[in-house]
Amino acid sequence: MNFLEERIQKDGIVKEGNVLKVDSFLNHQMDIELFDQIGAEFQKRFAGKPINKILTIEASGIGIACMTAKHFHAPVVFAKKSKSINIEGEMYVAEVESFTHKCKNQVIVSKKFLGPDDHILIIDDFLANGCALQGLISIVTEAGATLEGIGITIEKGFQAGGRIIRNLGYHLESLAIVDAMDPQTGHITFRSQD
Amino acid sequence: MNFLEERIQKDGIVKEGNVLKVDSFLNHQMDIELFDQIGAEFQKRFAGKPINKILTIEASGIGIACMTAKHFHAPVVFAKKSKSINIEGEMYVAEVESFTHKCKNQVIVSKKFLGPDDHILIIDDFLANGCALQGLISIVTEAGATLEGIGITIEKGFQAGGRIIRNLGYHLESLAIVDAMDPQTGHITFRSQD
Figure 1 (cartoon, helix red, strand yellow):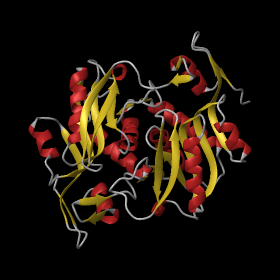
Figure 2 (cartoon, one colour):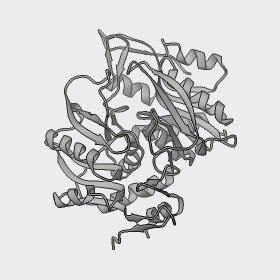
Figure 3 (spheres, one colour):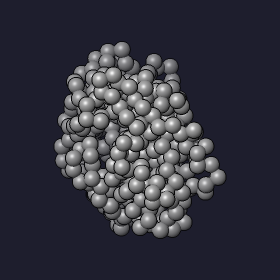
Figure 4 (cartoon, chains in turn blue, brown):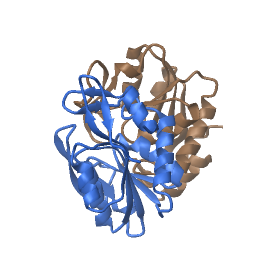
């Protein structure tokens, strides 16, 4: 097991309905030393790519994206989930269905901050059915930017999102891929990545 | 002018209606090197305080809070703006009015991550009327935690939020306090902090 899998097994809580709670270190309380390690690992996995910008989506992707951006010396752009009156002018828009919140959101990125010269690394905390990620990819495509890779912290390997993205030929790296979880015993089966 | 005031004067855009757009480096695209400098400055201003946790609110506070937490070697907890089905159990709740989005939100923090032993530094990107900040303070109070200080990146000094918080005796540090803005010339008047 790598450092993240060990942490998930130690502090993650498996609930009925394929819910994995990692809110004590990942998406409500955030362990910044762990995020720094995650960022260093992404830097290793995407080494040599001309990444000049990190793209993520609010809210829980932002912390990991920032700590990753530090290792790439690149800025972060985060997609916003609803139109704010402080964002004006032209925007890229994608529609994203949220499994967690059971609703559809528009996600938007200002055209000022993504364009054909950009080489993008998408970072997010979770990948399950992949709706949020598909929205981000469509925004990168619409911008004419180059998608250099996708870095996910935890992938639910028993859902279709990761398979679809890999089938489409994208370079997807998930630091931990959960293939099965048992809510009775709390045991988590990770996909071997050697 | 300090490093942040210089950056705001250089890249901030003043709009009618007392709007200051800093989305090219602060709250849509995020300059991580700048955030690191901001974190170091907060560390200096709150040096010697036994801060063990950073509290912020989604979404645009998260990046600054994470880069600040790195300097304090402390975790970040971010208040969430609506109830997620992945958060269960008991929570601290505060009602927050949003000037930007013209609506009321409940913000919540799980009771697991804030308690009487915690020494909290609140970090946020903006302080204007102070509604979000008042909500965070009420959550810290409800938790029985000690509020060691409040670090704000940009305060709109011509709105009441900062004055009220200082009148209440809290240790509030705003790295840049905007006392006036001219949408015709783009000139920004900062409050002297020497």
